[in-house]
Structure formats: C-alpha cells, structure tokens
Image (cartoon, one colour):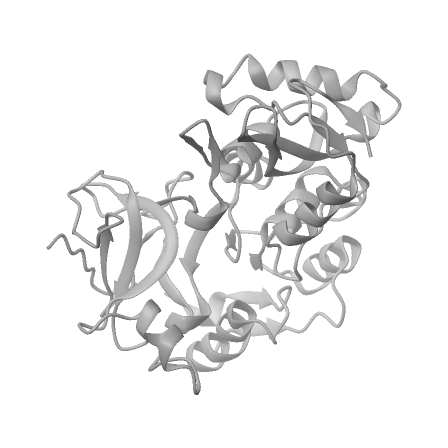
Amino acid sequence: MVTETCEYTGAWKNPDQRVTITSLPMYHAAGLNRSVTTGVTTGYIQVVLEKYTVENLCAAIERFKINDVPTAPPILLHLLNHPAVAKYDLSTLKSLNVGSAPVSPQVVRDIMKKFNAVCTQAYGMTEISPIGTMQTKETCVPESVGRLLPCMEGKVIDPEGQDLPWGSVGEICFRGPTVMIGYLDDPESTDATIDKDGWIRTGDQGFVDKDGNWFIQDRLKELIKYKGFQVAPAELEALLLQCPLVLDAAVIGVYNEQQATEFPRAYVVLRPEAVNDKDAPQKIVQWTHDRVAQHKRLRGGVKVVNEIPKSPTGKILRRTVRDMARKEDASVHIGAASKL
C-alpha cells in the first residue's frame, strides 16, 4: 500500500497578525470551513463581505488593510484582469489561497508576480469535511494542490482498486477522522464511495510525488475519450488561459457520429481587445494545436460565449456547457470554429 501522511506544518502561524475576508460563500463547505470554522478556532480578524464583486473585494482590502484572501479561480482571474483592480491600493496583500475548482499554474504564478504575495492551493471534497491536502508558503508548488493534512492518509489506485506507486496516475483516495460516515439513507451510494477499510474514493485522477506533493489531473468522469486516448479538460483549460486572446475557458467532449468518437471543444470568453476579431476562434484553434499532442487538438472547435457557467465557488458547470452544445448544430467538423 502506498500511503502518505504528514504532520502539522504550522499553516496558521501568528493568527493575531492575519486579517482576512469572507470572499467565498459560507453555505459552501470551503467557505464554511475557511470563514467560520477556521476563523473561530484561530481567532484572526475577519471582514465579512456582504456581496462579492471585484470592486467590493478590492475596496475592502484597501479599507481594512486585508493581508489574506481566500479565493476561487474566478476571483483570481478578476484580480488579474479586471481594469477596476488598478484603482485600489492592494499593497497589504501577503497571501491568497485558492480551492473549490482547478486553477491554472500560470494563473497562480501571475497572481504571485502581480501582488508579490504567495498563492497557495488546497484540495478536498465535502465528504471529507472538506480538505485533504493544503499548501503552506514553504511547500507552495503552483502545479500541486499541496500535502496531506494532519491525521489524513492518501493513496492512488488503478481502476481495479490496486495501489499504485509514486508518480503513477490513478484515482485519489483518502482516509482519516474527517471522512463522512456516509450518505444519509443511501447505503448503496455510501458503499460505492467508501470501502470496508474506510478509504473514500474522490473520483479525481492524479498522483503524488516523492516529496508528498499531490497533483490533480481531472475528474475521471469528465475525461474526454478521443479514439481511445484520454484528454483531460482541465489540462486544455489551463493551456487556453495562457492564450493572449482568451480570458476564460471551459472544455467538454462532443460526440462525432462520423468518426464514432468524442472531440474536445472549447467554450471561451475573449479578452476585450479580441472581442471584435472575427478570426479569433480560428486563431485560438491554431494556437492550441501548435502546443498540444495530436489527440488533444480542439477538433470540436472553439465557441465564443459571454461567460463560462460556474457555481458560486468557481466550478465549471459542465452539464450546463454540455446542454449548450446539445442545442447547437449536431454536426461537428474537424477544426470547426464558430461564434455561439
């Protein structure tokens, strides 16, 4: 069995010096844990944001000299790209942390460079109440989601449930005192999620390196299958966010009857300077094709939208995106690109 644990790392040192803000909704597990549970037990100063907008957040940071901001990926994108950010003095920022949804390593690097502040990540799920791994300033690796929390165990398994060695990609599993007892009145779902030894299957694909850093590749059920090859939407989304024409992106698989396979398709929000460029979708297709393996190309095309549908915590609502795709022309052509 390949299991990794870690001891307390002192992530919440000097709580009397920390001034933070409730930028995540408290009804979500991440917001509840970060803003309420952790806030009460550590005793740091916390400013409650009545309603999130990028201007409200920036104004609060400036007014209350906030030095720590919990975020989701959309908030990071706002802080990087929204023109209103430049109007405020955000020099008190020392740390940001992000969770709830995948974030591009490049976005993390850009945030740290722009604000000269550390940007750490955490990973978990509601069923483990809710964090399994977390970074500190000392263990920050932009590509990783951190190391195991105290008392947590982690392993990676193959589709048959067998343990995999270091560096091997498979399904991530956790075990520890914060793992839920089970789903209420649903023993079938509970048995499918938690095994007899108490390991919970996250449904997320990833690996752990020799230093104990955990890496998430994608949701297993969200993987796109192109002629037998697996394509991770999060990988393409992270790449698209580096494209100079793209502000935000979501990738799904669309089925092509002629070739009996799925094609990766990107839905993108263009940067303001690219909005009037009629050739932007084709340029994005070509830009992406020049940077990925042959089976990862956007054969489903690029669709321009006003916004990417997301949950309040920043997770891409892929079901909504798939519904958008189903309403479009069922014919999908290789390299096609059009505006929705």
